[in-house]
Image (cartoon, rainbow, N blue to C red; front, side):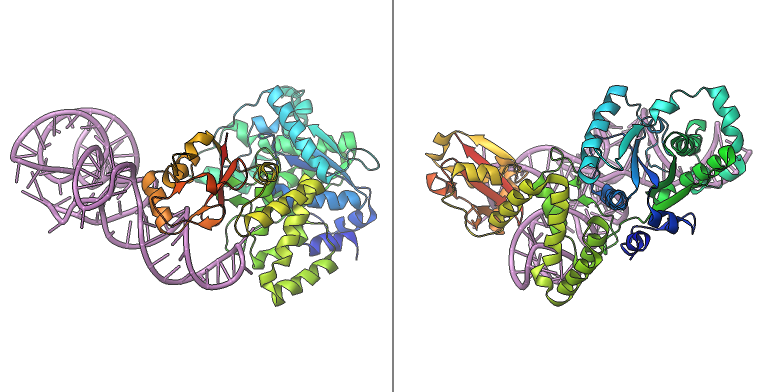
Length: 423
RNA sequence: GGGGAGAUUCCCGAGUGGCCAAAGGGAACAGACUGUAAAUCUGUCGGCUCAGCCUUCGGAGGUUCGAAUCCUCCUCUCCCCA
């Protein structure tokens, strides 16, 4: 199977601008680019599919360019929901670029061979002067066409909304990026989300008009879940690739909890596993879903790619302990490692002498919002001390409840852990 | 500029003088069942020293034994006409 067939079978392609593209991709040596929003210093799982596609293409002999939208970020894509863009400072953008580059490095090779590069479009967009830009670039754009673009049209149709000239120009800048990257790096392919179609096509048109070069574009489908909700959000918000923003444990658990209906599709989209291997897991999901082998594999592959083998092992071990039986007789080191990401409350060890009420402990650790809720939680059997359900409202924690010499583990519900560190 | 409607607990939304911490739905949180899934069912869902008490119905006053409900003023939102 050739590369193009493979990526389309994985579900990584929604639309391509031209039939010829398949041939180019199978030949190799295509320089392609993907744009990233510079507003944060970490990518999130919503980027996972595109990262995987970039990785697959690089391994297939193509050259990836990551473009940070340092310049376009100051303008704002009219398709985006936010009305006003914050102007990021250069230092912020540099900081964000570093963060993103480190993460891209997990998926792409920046070192040798057909090595990836990361650039900031501020570098060239900031050099443009208005007169030159209008004369050399603006003249190739038809306003008639621009106002029919979905992103612009929806803003025009909505009463009282409108669109500023600034945002209206966004499309021109992104188109110019593609032209510029073609000139400077011989970049001939742009890949983006399905909402980027219009912008990509604008770049292709512009470049053809300026220098006659034929460029290509691919859009990726929006990754959705079987229940219709958007992939990438957990109860507590977006799942980031950075360990500071989303702990590796939470990251692993997020993938582990995906539904049977989604997991095979996700294996194809998010991992490099061969399609043959994936079809074995497909059978497993069908015949023995309770074993959750596919979910485990997905969580494993994703966590390994982002956080590495060593952290993966720790996270798997932590998961086993956390979803296991009673926690006792562990040493401090093991506990603090397993529960590294769990919020913990420091407490004087002496407070256990006179007994420390479970209700207070639940409130103080933040497991419950108020004493009333803590009381109800205990009554419903949802409060756990060292993984054992405790239903006595007046329960007092004592030295006997320590899971290790200085730790005590509380839990509300199935997976919400809190740690008390006795000093 | 003229006329009308409205603001209720996280969200939607009922409630027009006591039976109101306020119906119903959603979200959320627990429990059961499971597979750390989905669906379903059950419970909880302002606070507390919890059979009781305290603080809430846009804001400030007032009437009343008693106000989310009535009156006055203010703030904000929406609709229609010009």
